[in-house]
Image 1 (cartoon, rainbow, N blue to C red):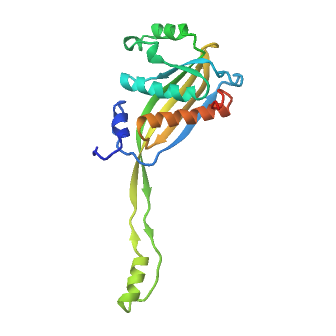
Image 2: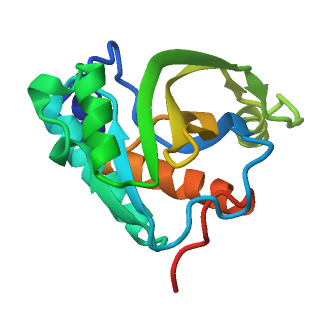
Image 3: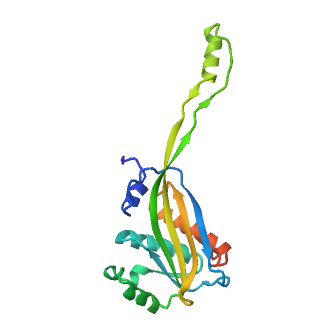
Length: 216
């Protein structure tokens, strides 16, 4: 990794994602989404207290990205609280204590985000030939012809694809409300990556009637 590569590469490596080196144009797509068929519109309403959880063992990353997740949900009228304020680091993998802490918070829902994988994806760009025709009889005409008919060799582009799982659990009903998996190609700086991911997920959930649109 060279010093000129974006900070995202280093930060995502800290998430124990191995081999992340490509950081260029970023794009995100949802691989799949699911909504509980019997969930009422706006099951999680504006003003509801919700828990934001980023499931990752790196504590500093967990804390910073839960704050980012909270900020995006706050813009949509919810009252988010990061899970690290409820669950101490030494109890985060203690299922019973963690569940009890979340339940006692009085939260209506849990918004969870979990990185699943980082994969390399190679795309072959085939060679191209620029058209042109002209005589070989003299240098001037050939010069124009030669450059117009230049050959551009094929090449391989290597992209980094990060897959993330997003879940929304309705604590009142004790069930999964919404789920999605997304692929982001060449993610940018980590905070921006998470913020943009949450924005897109929130927009999708708003379209599906799971949460309200952003507060004006």
